Image 1 (cartoon, rainbow, N blue to C red):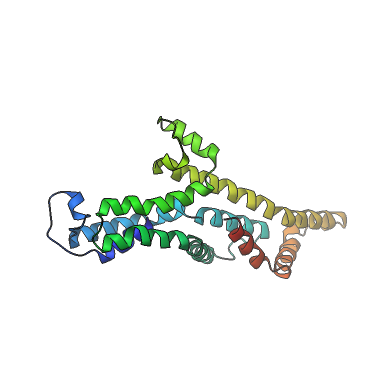
Image 2: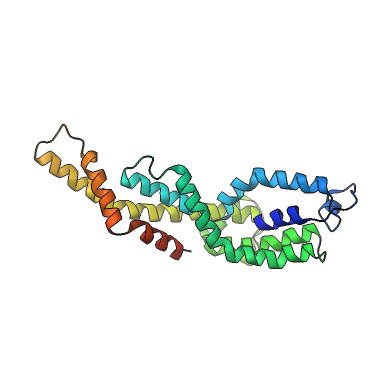
Length: 234
């Protein structure tokens, strides 16, 4: 959906303006409506990135890692956001290619209307989200939406798939973060017990444990292991 709206808005051919919205986003596009759609997309782009891509899981795991290491601001939020964005683009590239082939190219060729392009472009994204959305979360929102029970997962509407996918990604991110936290928690406990046993009550254990945790993380090539584990989880 993201590349569909971006490419369709940027490359739409200009035509005579009409009175209804469907005509403007169909094969007879106009420059004013293209600008409106582009500006609207830019305001919704952060929410779309966080709700329909793997970025939720990645940012949650990065946050847990920084807390476990005890480095409050290193790496900075900008660095982690940039890394998460690039990994998200890498993971979503097959989906983006499908959207381009199924919706953007036919729309540019004038074979389908804008609404048809939106429907076709949302299918690969929906399939991707259904692959990682838990059945339990889907059932929760299907029940809350007061709609008829779908015969198959593909029949679930997007308004149900998106929040269910986000809940599933949050759960997966917290699970990975909890496992990631355990070895660093062990280092904190060992350092705290040693400093207490030798009577170093005035020295905070975090002063000693933080360099040890960073050294341990560097020695095991932690960033490579973390990135590899995150990529394999999708």
